[in-house]
Structure formats: C-alpha cells, structure tokens
Length: 524
Image 1 (cartoon, rainbow, N blue to C red):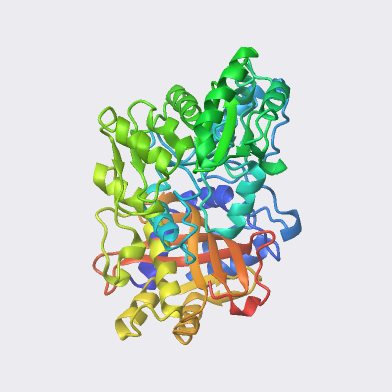
Image 2 (image 1 turned 30 degrees about the vertical axis):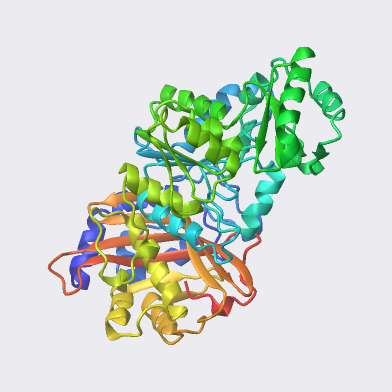
C-alpha cells in the first residue's frame, strides 16, 4: 500500500479514530501536552491535515497519573468506593466493570490456584508460567476471564507478584475463598465477607485452637478475619482435623477445617472455601449475562478440592499435586469425569487441560519455534503484539536465527513512516529502533532476560485499524521494568509485497515504580 492509499484509508476512518483516542489515550502521561505531540505524530504518518486545533488530549505528569479502574478494555479515573453499605450499588457497577471487555458470555473462565499450580517454585526461569502468559494474552484475554484462587493473604499475594511474572487477573480470591477482590485495583466484595459472618466467631476459634499443642500458628500476616491458619505434622493432621471440628461445633459455630499442602490447616466459616467463592461468582456472572461457556479449575492441594465439586466445571489436577488431593481424586474421579490428572507440572498442566477438553487454542506462542512464519486460525491484534515482543526477546537472547528473513520480518511489521514515543518522552522512527535492536543480536544470550505482556486489550476503530493497549514488562539483571503501551495497528492489503499487520504508532510511559534506571537501553 503506497503512502497516498494508506493516508486515504486512515483518513476515512479518522472520525472513529478520534473518538477512540479520546477514550484510549486519556490516561497517558506525557512529558508535554499531547496537543503538541500529536502534530509531530500526524506529520510523520501523513495525517496532519485531519487534526483541528480543537482536538486536544488530557495529559498528566507521571507523578499525577490516575489510578486505573477495573476492566481490561478501559482505564478511566475513578476513586475506589468507600467500604460502607451505602456503596453496594456502586460495587455492583465495579463488578460489572471488571467484565467490560466481554460482549456477552465469557468464552472461558480459568480459576487457578497459585503456588505449585500456576506458579512452579521449582522452575527458576518460570518458563511454564511464561508459556501460559503468552497463550492467555494472545488468545483469551479479550473474551475470557482469569481468576486466581489462593490460600495466600493480600499481603503475601502482593509479595508473590513482585517475584513472579503473574498476569493481572479479572478476579482474585484470597485466603482460601474468604476474600474476593475485583480487578487490578483489588476492590473487595463486602457482601461476601458479610455473608461469612454467619455462625462464625474468631475469638472462639482462636480459643479452641490454642488447646491443640500440635498446631503451630502461621505468621500474623496469614491470619485473616475469616481464616485462621496453622502448621501441623502430617501424622497429627487427621486427628487434629476431627477433634477440632467437633469442639468448634460444640461451641455453636459452623466451620470447616481444611488440611492441605502436607503441612497446613486452615479454619474457615462453613460457607467459605474456594468452591463456594467460585459458585458465588458464577451466580453473579449469570445475573449479569456473562456466565462463561466453559470453566476450568486448576489445583494441587487439599484446599483446592472444593473447586472440583462446583457443578459443570472442567478440572485439572496438576502432575505435581500433593497426596491429599491425589487421594481425593482417586476416590472421586468416577463421579467427576470432567476432571483429569495432568502429566505435566503447574501451568503446563493447565495448558494440557485446555487441549484435552478442547476449550480453545492450545498452542502457546512460546512453543512455536519460527514465529515469523506462524499462522493462526483466526486473527486478533493481541497475537501481533505478543508475537512481536517474543521475537524481540529471542533476538536479544540469540534464540532465533540471525537471518535476512527474520530481519525483514521485524522491519516489515512496522509502518515505513511509523513512530514510537518512548517512556522517556523521546520520539523516534520505529524502523530506526528496530535497526538498533538488530545490531544487538545476542547481547542477552546466557543472561537473565525475559519479556511478557499483561492486560492486552484492543478496540477496532475501522475495518483495518485497531488501538491495542497493554503493559509491557522486561526482566533483566537490572530488575523489572514496565511501561504502559498503546499501539495503533493497521492491517495492510493482501496485494502488497509484505501483507499483514503494521505498527503505525507506539506510545509508551513508565508504570509508577518500574522505570528503567538506564533509559537509553530501552528499545520499545
């Protein structure tokens, strides 16, 4: 497509582009008013005559950048609601906002435990988790829901996020199903916690557990309003669970005592648990018309058992599961034919289950050796950006061939007049940045260097153009860096010499607390 044709096609849909930009660029921190930047952008891609002086963008300094609301496809400024009962209607809106990227029913909902299920602590490279991340962001994020359901408390969950490349879930269920939070902002569901108060008394639970010398209290950060946690030796577990349950019942409480991980005991209200929390979410999704077509639950230990008993779900017990869950599976597998015991560990077992049950695409981009030639059955803009940044990672790690074909592919994916505004505010030619990367082939070989994308969302603004938004993460010896990235993506005509998607404009800004110390080493 020559420059004239490209300009005309983009100009035809510019009314839609302008409206979309009001929505999608309003959050971007800029080093100068965007009313100045946009003219330089327009000049580079031949659109200057389509901008009027009244076309302005709000902008923020990095220090005053607004917090982003729940939801994958929109990031507006909103104060988190107060915790009083007067905000129930507001909280209902926030629950719905978490699902804003869904037009109707979710295609798939994955509900996964974290430790030893989604996260493999015996995999220092986190390769299985990165495989899942690439598959989820390229194929599922736009029409599905990701839920983490863990025994971790809010504090220990946040700590895990700083150590592992975890994606941002749509919903987070913490403290063995006793706390539910929505979106990136972790807005709590107070109605769920209020429900759990029925026949629950924390003081009585603490009083009774102190009578068992076999129990060793876990750290204070793991004790929650509706969860009391202890360590116990495996040979004492069965007796303690039985006796403690009886004592609490005799005190008039309705509780459940869960043994998991070969060493942990959690005391919860009877109505709590991972399975009960999932059923509660299913009911809310159904009420909002977004009940998923399929749900896949994933676990490795005893406190995941409840997940597998939720009606109509598919389930996967990962290969590295603990004995108590394996024993449950052995006794109950005939009653739950939609549950499998995977032959692969952790997140790789989750991917295996997706393929086994035919729930959707099962090939992670990280499993494709030659991404430059890889064709998918259906096109999503998210596939383009995930593939592009994965090739970038492999190029710098010397895990892709240093060939003319690969170099040509990296150049062809950018528009000849495409530009990038780096997080530092510097504006460059995209082709120039790609040429700079080409000269760095293998500079991260044998070193700690990984790239992954999170919260990929896109909006079609014309028949052949999309706005794509995501968080781009880099992990290296210098630590973690992350920038909020917005891409204008154009689909080139099949009649062109190199048809396919083209990056027209890229705009990046640092995420608070994750700016690179050496910003000259940031390519895109």
